[in-house]
Length: 238
Picture 1 (cartoon, rainbow, N blue to C red):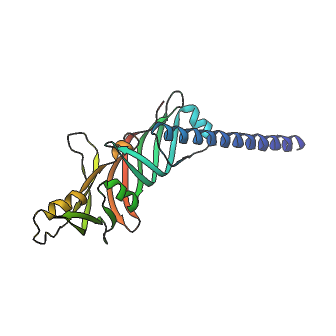
Picture 2 (picture 1 turned 90 degrees about the horizontal axis):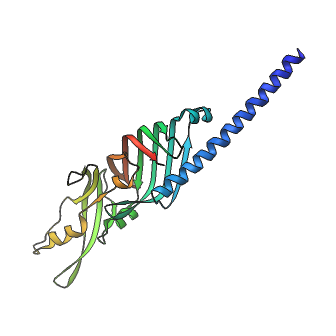
Picture 3 (picture 1 turned 30 degrees about the vertical axis):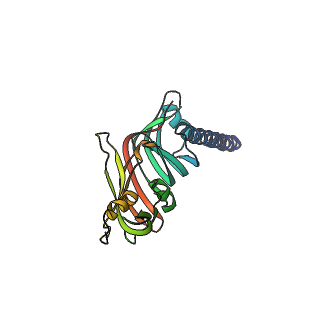
């Protein structure tokens, strides 16, 4: 009986040591992966990685991870030579196959969501326009000042935000903002001048992890909400 008790105690201690070692290993891997993702993509802001599943060491030895979650906050992505800031980007990677040197991995599939605030959407317009909520899903209000015959006119229009295919056969999607209507008020060329400031396109796909693409979007009081998805998504590379 005493021997059985000793064996049980030793088993509990070994289990605790293994669990502790496993948690240390997964925490180290999460921090290194977050640093690598941020460094490789030249991201400002913060990144956080959460590796699911227990034990981690067994998954690592087989080079297969069930699920990896990525959280980015206040990051800037480059697309079409322009910077666009994402207030939030949350993505979940499933079926991750690790590289041979554990320097990164590729997920069989991934899905996620993102948020661009109206302040950041205003900056992304690069036209001097101010963007705010348009009062309905998929709508924004764009306010601009234009010079007409030496006079400065302020105009505010309700615009529709859509997701369209990138031009030139490049693949991927772009965010398109177009005014629903611009009253001309009988002033020659006014609508054209206003639309030059209110209408714009912005690509984001090239700033996201390779294989993760925009699939849908909408708007509310908080900003522009993005839905993302993809297959064979590169979480990080060697």
